[in-house]
Length: 105
Image 1 (cartoon, one colour):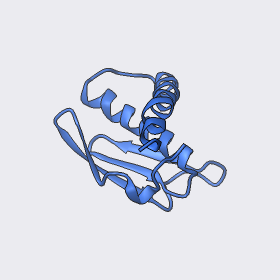
Image 2 (cartoon, helix red, strand yellow; image 1 turned 30 degrees about the vertical axis):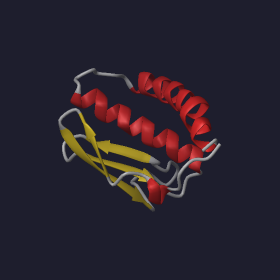
Image 3 (cartoon, helix red, strand yellow; image 1 turned 135 degrees about the vertical axis):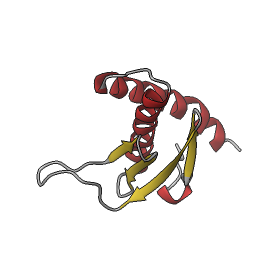
Image 4 (cartoon, one colour; image 1 turned 90 degrees about the vertical axis):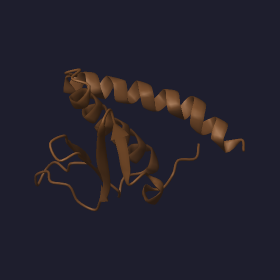
C-alpha cells in the first residue's frame, strides 16, 4: 500500500467554513514520558502532526486530528474514545479502497 510522505500532505484543509493550516512538525508538546504525535487547535485553526512517524501512523494521526476539527466545526461533540474508533475505521476504509485503487494506476 502506497501512502504519501509527510511532504505530500496538504498545507491547508477546509473543514466546514474554516481553513485549517496543516503543519508537519519535528516535535509537538508532550511530557518526558509521553510524546504527542498530533494536535488540533480549533481556536487558531491549526492541525499539527509529528512528521517522524511511519507513513501509516502519520496517515492515522492526520485523520484523527481531522476528526477533532470536524467535531468542533460541526458541533458534533465527539469524545476522544469515539475519535479513536472513527480514526481506525476511516483509515482502514480508505486504505482498503482508495489507496489500493490508486496504486493500480
